[in-house]
Image (cartoon, helix red, strand yellow):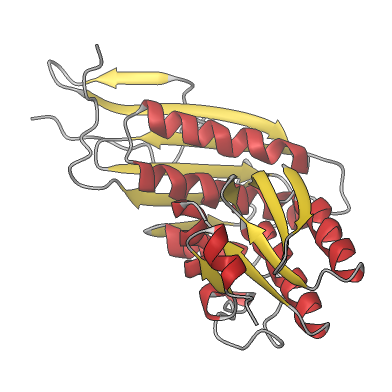
Length: 112
Length: 177
């Protein structure tokens, strides 16, 4: 897994590439947590290069979602692969977080 | 007309390795492959990739391939995090039997067993503040599989059996050039 953060005009984009699983979850959680503590509370997680997510990865999203919202921000997901979207839907995550087909749509959703 | 026999339970020797049987004049009926890894979380990717690869090579449809990949990852991760927690690492054996109609995967370990009846159902409906973090792994396994059986402390280890029918139309044994 590879994780990077980049500030855009409307939100902070975190791109996660590779596999988000029991091995990589802690690193992703701590990366996202650091970004939020540094003030990047309006997040888009770009999933375009995320090939695989397990329940350990879902924990990452939920932990960061709670942290961001408690700081008055949000965490929104963009461009999930089919299998990643399937896991999000099966787990009931689509009812608590916002999911967008591509990065531009996710960024635009933060337009004041 | 040969009927596929699925070795849902590995034989006394713990399952055949790489066995391929052909019915007389018919297509391949069952391909069984097996992998054992120590219970380190770093090995989970090897086990799930192994199952993905075994299913793909047997011509299993992609939705079923993914279902087994994720279910095996969730099950083996639980074994590492709970079964072998606080103990010396031990083996986890994954046996994958691909038959024309269904795939059967068994996962064997020698860690602490669990009581499936004591598990609480996953919470998929409370709002974000009250949504518990974690507890989804076993729920996903149930959701992804047609049948899940668990035998705690069986001779030869705890045994989890995962069964899923292959999608119709994704014929097995498709000849490859």
